[in-house]
Image (tube, rainbow over all chains, first blue to last red; front, side, top):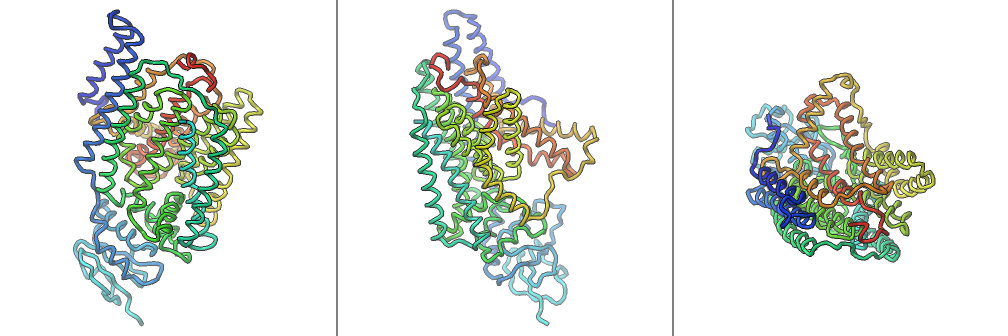
Length: 162
Length: 437
């Protein structure tokens, strides 16, 4: 459960600076207060706060923002080059859908690689892609032959001609 | 100067939208365009918009800078902007290099659809609409169409192109906020409002993601800006309204939320002008906006009717009577408000920054313009629309659904909201410097 209010130090500093602004605006110390000075203070305060956020973004990206590089492995590229002209290709994986991220990485990576083929879950189409972490021959029904093993758990099968 | 700059940036965004729509229409009706035909299309569209720019530029009133504030007000925001652009630019490019193919939605939807369009000549691109797992085939095609058009132009499927387009959409948003606010306010608040955008990390994180959130944010912003220009510069009122309609159409052709935006803009306009009994303005404005909107709406309706299976936003009305559902949605909105900007764990919430900005510039409300009232209603109308979508959604896990979507929906509205707040409370453009102060 997230906190009701943010707890980072920036908000404490903002509160103090806002109190200073109010003191200037209400002219509590007439020598330095007044509308003009309070507006200049507020501008500097705003620019400082903006700079803090720009710094937060910069540092976050510096720390690394990379995701899902596995999707674009060469293997997926070579798979798309091997597929002949067609419309639909089957897709089988040993990864359970409950393991959402791992399943999505493989499924969408494959889908993206083989477009404009339509990736269809199951083994009904004549061509079937197996994208499995651990290959199990039982994933593929009888009557299909291996066309190529690309490595990294990626295999392409084709239905035997009658 | 800043008025011409704002207009040029907005027209550049409209060139991208028009080119995308034309390339898609070409592919749908004639077949895949060749690099030469795509180039001719781009040159033709750009030429038309340059002509529009030159005609409008001559008629935009040239007004003097109005600010009479202390020199710090001129120097500090501009200096911050330069530093901010350098830091944010470096960070955005770095992030784009870290994830060259964008975020999940980029390769699961937007760039995937672009690949279908580019690789799927002779009708194979219609595989986008195949009813298979998570195909999302019903999503509008402005972004995929644009990426396809750019790939067609260069004759190669280079990953850098969607990345560059994504960054260009973001940069245009910042540029339009800066120049548009500067043109209307005639003081330094243009710099500050653009800085508020640069100080919203979650807005910047979306640039290299290559999703459609930044493009739709850009078209929403452009629509709001053009509507404000139409009100402020009576000399170019009608063409600005037509362009606003075109821009709103592109928002609808970018993502489904854009249709809600069109309804919100037209609805708030209708309600405001009708309540104020500005009947003649109402008729003229809606006609002009409709003129710009019509071609893109026709494309969108044809797309929805002929290419994709039915997609009703009202998935179920079963939840409407559940009090718990309302509470859950409100909690989702609260969480989204907290997480907005990506600064909860470090940094300062962008709403707080906007509050400080308004404190600096807010003046007593006098002679509010009808357009400002109308635009002020758009964002609450959009949020109300999102609430209803969640209410009528059949998603099982509402908490995750809202958590995964609402933050981005709010980011889409952010540039337009900043623009509207920075310009909405201004007197008319013919006001003297003292009035603006």
